[in-house]
Length: 350
Image (tube, rainbow, N blue to C red; front, side, top):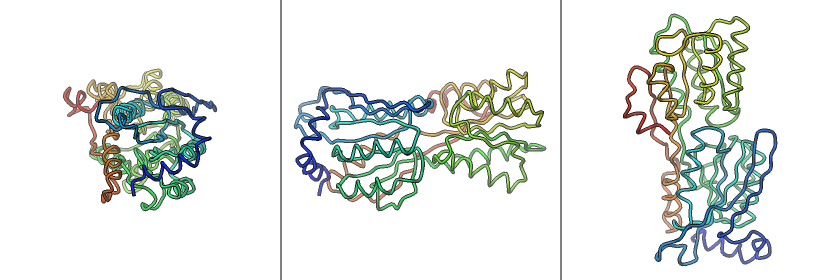
C-alpha cells in the first residue's frame, strides 16, 4: 500500500488539527531559541507546478525534514539548500523543516510532524540514540522514515533507507594519510564535534584506534561543538600551558579555521612548510583553497548532496517497489596540499 493513502486516512481523522496548520501556500515559522541552538519549523516555499506534476493533481507528498542548524557549518548550509531545492511543490512535495543541534528538540519536532500526518519523515539526527519511540510512532502511522547525513542506533527494519557518509571511513582515510607522513613523533590536538553525533563518533573512533596502534600522543581531546571560536580557545589553552604539539586534527573545517587563528596569534607556523599539520573535514571551497595555498595540510570530504537519493527512494516507495538497498554510502575522498588541484576545488568544494 502506498504511504500516501495511509496518510490520507490520517488527514481525514485529524481534520481539526490540520486545519490549524494552514495550506502549503503560506509560510509559517515557529522558532525556539535555547542558547546557541535554534529549532525552526516552516513550510517550504511554494513554486508554480507544471501541468503534469503531482502538485497540479493536488496530490503532494508531505515530508517533514529534521536537520541540524544550517548555520552550523558550510557543509550544513549546502545540505539544507540541497533539500530545499529538491522538496518543492514543483517537484510534487509539500515540505516542512525543523532545525536543532539538540536531540530532544529534534525528537519533539519529529513527533509534531507525525501528528501532522506527513507521508515521510526525513531525519539527520543530532545524536545517534533516543529515536526508538519516534521510529515506532512513525511505523504505527504508516510514515516512512529516511535517514540522511547521519546514522542512528536502530534496527534497519524501522526505516526505509539511510543515505549517509561513512564517517568512520572518512576518519580512517585521514588517519592513514597522517600515518604516511612519517613524522618523528605525533603529538596531536584533537578537536571534536558535537558529542554523540555520527560525524564525531566515526572521526573520533578512527583517530583513537590509530593513535593506540601507532603509539601517537593525543595531548588533548575536547569538543568545540563545530564552533570556530571554541576551537580557537582549546588550542590557545594548549599553547598557554606550553604543551608540545605538531598536529591538529579538527573534525570540521570551521574548527580547523579556529585552531589556525590561535596558531597565527601565537606566531606558530603551520601547513606545508610549517611546524604544525592542520587537518579538517567537509571540503568547504575556502578550506580547500587553504589546502592548495599550503596553509592547511589535509581536508576530508563529506558529501552534502543527498536530496536526489532521497527523492529516488520516495518515488520507488510510492510506486510500491521494494527498497533493497537500505544503506547508501556517499562516495568521498581526502585532499592534501601536495596533490590538490584547482579542478578539485571547483568540483568538490561546497
